[in-house]
Image (cartoon, rainbow, N blue to C red; front, side, top):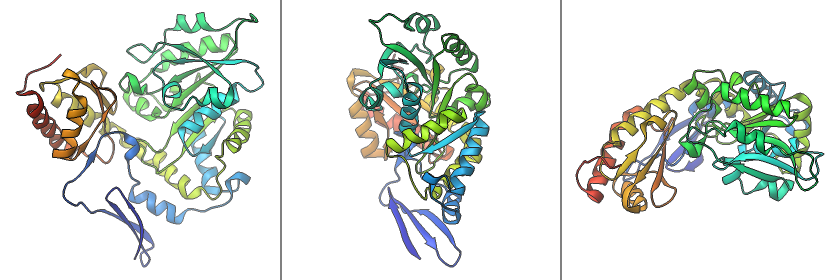
Length: 384
């Protein structure tokens, strides 16, 4: 047996005799439960097997059969003509933004102030595309007011840049993982269609929105000109994302992907995981939502923590820590209980559930929070 990988206490072996990957965990002193993000998910045994058996070719020549199958499958479930496989959802979003602004001098994108494309993607639209961002407030429910979008679409005044597109995010991460509804997206799409500009949806967690709203993914993006999905978050692939839209748009996207360094070769070995993600992992996301809700309920009465339960609709829960002691709480959870969560500032903390946080660990997480908050703040008294 040959050691293939040693990643975050995960040992993966390839069993030569049985011709498949064997995966098991080797815990040392303490089991680490990582709730910092759903990006930390590790591939499933089915994914390792799919990688070992994947049929490969050169994807830049569009000759990798596994990638081609993944792109066709993704386009179908998203209701679009075509799709393209890229390394990351950041690249998928940037490819869409550059594509929708191609041929426009002085382009401008309307985007929410809490959207991932605006906050956490290195300003790629401005840096690589010279695309100006016109920023509007994301409301508590993740939406941008329709009247604000309409008002800020530029006319042809020579003093202004030219509005090329609107970008939305679903689910809306920094608003608590809130899902946007198909009805709202339809209304935004009606505006962009009327103004002859494009609508892109950053659907990194689109399938979480689909589960939370009980709406097919293709319905959620029906009004959009393009949509991205991430395979390496709750869907547990080791890497990869997809961008879907009209066929000519995706043809152009292949040029953009190549320019951005995203033209991979025998990448079917990763695309094989993507097929497992879309066929199997999308079917279990409700478990993550239930676990997030149960953890939120369990910690909502603890002294020092404030949770808005109405906002815990998917696999994310954000909570506030009093007295600007979020860093202390994060450190205590890690040091004494082996639980990793992420502090955004001195008050705000995020925990994200995923397939590597089974429901059997929910009570342990709640107990750890109780002990940590009692150590830092005293008894169990609701803080608001």
